[in-house]
Length: 141
Ligand code: HEC
Image 1 (cartoon, rainbow, N blue to C red):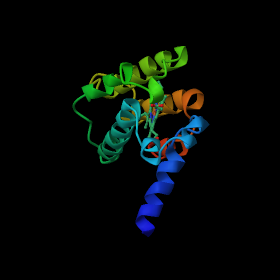
Image 2 (cartoon, rainbow, N blue to C red):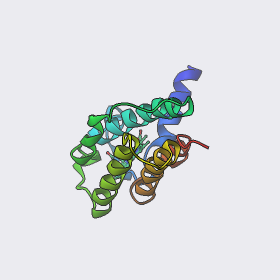
Image 3 (cartoon, rainbow, N blue to C red):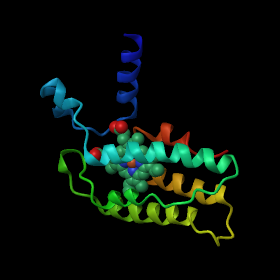
């Protein structure tokens, strides 16, 4: 029970704060229906935990995870249209991710990786502030 409560609590914590309050009138199962974008973001989050570990242990991540490109086409919650901000930031983000896999770059891997995480944070500042504290944990100190 304690574990379930913890999980539910953390799901609540990491959700976007600007979620639609009209949702509270719907049936409970619908409240847990997650969008394509949310699922993608959760996978991207997990992938970054792996990338972070690799970089800390001195390994260069090898393959650009092409499914990250689904950021350009995944459906948002309630099928909301992408804002101009979202479109701009998603391009910046993907450019930063690509730079991690640039084997001839003269910028340190740690900096390139942190730049990518900072662009997650930039986008979230305007689009979805809830997960920011959690995203910050992905930064390499
Ligand atoms: C271009 C903007 C943008 C970028 C870049 C971005 N996000 Fe998101 N993120 C969003 C939006 C918008 C949502 C909400 C999705 C929805 O409403 O369907 C979201 C949702 C999430 C969620 C889901 C929260 C939940 O309810 O479970 C997590 C976690 C997350 N993002 C982490 C990240 C991480 C980590 C990165 C970078 C590695 C990142 N995001 C990059 C815009 C962005």
